[in-house]
Image (tube, rainbow, N blue to C red; front, side):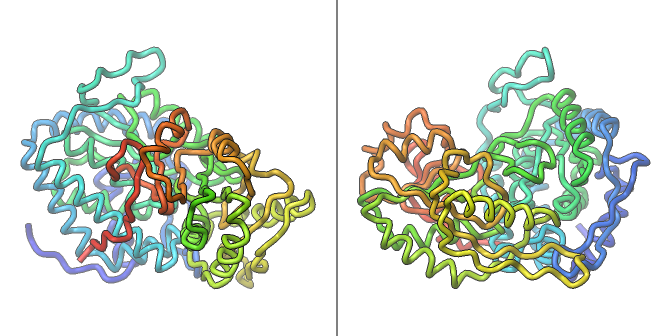
Length: 468
C-alpha cells in the first residue's frame, strides 16, 4: 500500500474525506437539503453534510447487497488483513480523529482520549476474533415485517447498525466490524455530528481495501424527527438484520427524553461508600451524562448515605466537565427539569451554577454537574430523566427496595458490595440489566468481560492500550 501524508488537523481529515466519501458512495444521500455542522465548542463551521431521505436508505441497502456479492468472495484471511490495514490507517490519523471527536462529537479532551483507547480495544478484539474464527451468527430476530427471522448461524447479507452519540467511534466499530469480517455489508445510521467520525472511518476502510458500497452511511439531522423515524423504518424493513447493541435503540432524534432507560448504581450496606462515590462521579458526569452507560440513578443504603454523599458531593464539586450536550436545547431542558424537581421537593446537593453560554449563542454550553437528593420520587420515573450530567440519589433500607428500583432501569447496573458475586447472581435473575458490574462503574460496549455470565468484576481502566 503506498504511503500517504499523515493528517494532522481535523480540517485536513474532514476536508479530504467528504469529497472522497461522496464520490465512493459512502454517504447515501440524494438531492435533499444540506446542514452546516459547526464545532461543538468554537461554533466555527466544519462541513456541510447532505441529509438522507427514506429513499436513500433503501438505495443504500440495494447497493450494499451488490457489494456483498463481491466482499463475501474475499477469503477470511484477506478480510482479517483488511482490518489490520484499517487499524493502521486510523492509528496514523490519531490526532485528527481526536480533533473530530472534540469539535464534531462534542467530547472533551479526556473523554475523546478515552474513546480512542476504547476504539482501539474494539479493533484489537475483533482482530483476534478474526484470527481464531467467529462463532455462529446470533441474530436480533428481524428480517423485515412479516419475514422469518434468520436461523442461528445464518449470516445476513446486509446489516443495519446505529451509533451511540456518546461513543461515536467505538460504537460505530462494534456495530459494523463483526458483519464486515464475516463477509457481510453494513448500512449505518448516524446523526450529523457522529457522521463526521463515521466519514473518517469509512473512508479509511475504503482505502484499506473494502469494496465500494460495502459500508455506507445514512445521515440524519436533529430537527426533522418524522424523516428520521421513516429512515430507520426503511432500514429495519429492507436490511436482513440489525447489529447487536450494548443497549437497545431509543426514539430517533429525541431531544426531550433520555433515549434509553438509564443505568443504576447501588451502594449496599456492606459496600465501600467512598469508592462508590468516586466511581459515581465518572458514571454520572463524564461525556456530559449521555450514552448508554450514563448512570444518573443512585440508590444508597441508609447506613452508608452520610459517608457516600459527603464524598460524592466533594468529588463532584472538583469535577471539571469537558464534554457538551450536542443540541442547543438540551442544557436548557436539563436546567428546567432540575428547577421543577426542586420545586417538587428534591433537595439540591450540588447545582454547580448555570453554564455560561457563548455570547453569540453559537455553541452549546457545557453543563455543570447536578446532584439531587430525591424527595420528589423522580427515581420512580426514570424514563423522564433528562439528558445531562445529573445524579438523582435515593436512600433505601432493605435490599429488596434496591432490586425493585432495578426492575425499572436499563441495561447497566453497578453494585458496590463485599458480598461475593455467586451469592448475588441468583437475585439478579429477571432484572432488565444485562451488564452488571461489581465494585466498578458501568462501562458501555459489547465485548465480553468477567467470569460469571452477566456479572463483571474487574476494572477496564487497567487496559491502557490505544492508538500508538
